[in-house]
Image (cartoon, rainbow, N blue to C red):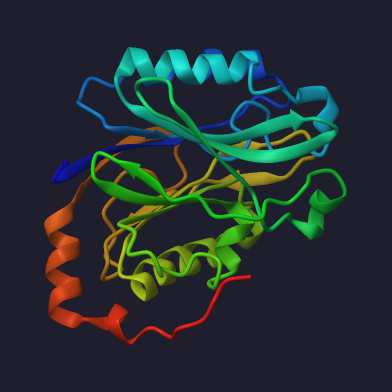
Length: 259
């Protein structure tokens, strides 16, 4: 079990509906990291941008981007996660993949499809949360719009890290800022949100604001804000243990079942 976890938060512009160029761009950025990392976190639909043109960018689980993630995880000896458009049978999914350094893959299909953009008309919604066990850390990875629904992210499994990958637009960025911090505080967990920057093919602007919070809602990252950049954030298990034991807030959580 690792006492600390070094997480690379990748805040980047995305090339519209161009998986190959996005893979090239991301690899160039990741190859510049010189410090030791355990987990690489990419934005939502990191190889295409948040598109409703699923047919034009969809890949299978045997596709080039999944293979790229596996190769990258093995090369860097770090887990890598982010979402992309996956076709399975006749359905399209906004699917988050968590790829271990040995190539093992876990998946989470975004539950809350973004109705304002008509995502529910294109992508099938997921039904189950994913709990990842990595280096002794329990990680709950979710996708963008899931952030607005606290019941879905409720810490009823004593996870250590709540993770959101997103394409969250500038026009509603204050909600992103507020809710990320709230999720950390209410769940007494580390909470990291990774958002993109730049313009997409629909003219929507993204201002980043990727962030990492500790269990008290204190900000851990220092350099991201609106820049195209990567920051390494170090999480420490002792911080979680100290404040959960001292404050005991999770012991008083309401008991109900997710549906």
